[in-house]
Length: 168
Image 1 (tube, rainbow, N blue to C red):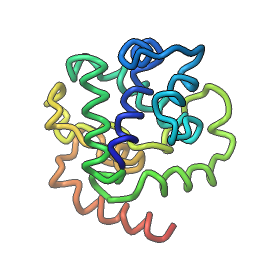
Image 2 (cartoon, rainbow, N blue to C red; image 1 turned 90 degrees about the horizontal axis):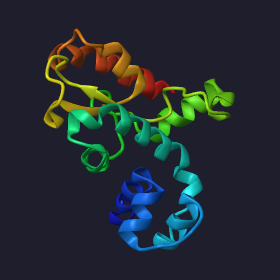
Image 3 (tube, rainbow, N blue to C red; image 1 turned 120 degrees about the vertical axis):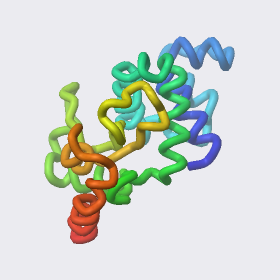
Image 4 (tube, rainbow, N blue to C red; image 1 turned 180 degrees about the vertical axis):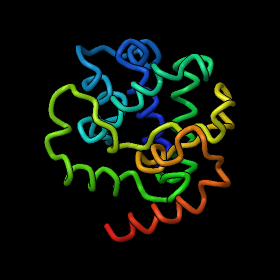
């Protein structure tokens, strides 16, 4: 991910008021502000990802010390993991393609459907609130690991999930 893409995602997730205030822009929509601030990036391509990160930010902002802190962490973690699941290594793009094929109507409307983007996963379930304890995982790994398996115990299962993705 380029530094411009990372900055774009951060500002887009933070939202209209934040982008307007921090970049001193005017416009009537978040998309129009993003186009002014980041003219080389197509907002529409990232719309679903922005919505996903914003949902996670709202859910985990207290754990991370606020929405801004969560958004910074997410963008950096996504880049650090090269857009791949921390456990099985599948790319977010491959997950998205797979789930679009399985549930093509799932992206239509406001119903939130999991699987299209990497999710926040706590490596150790009892250590909430520590960003060092969090990684990004695909839907399949996040569900399979659940809250009772350790990161170490999950490695053999992750290998099987990786093999599943290789076949897709």
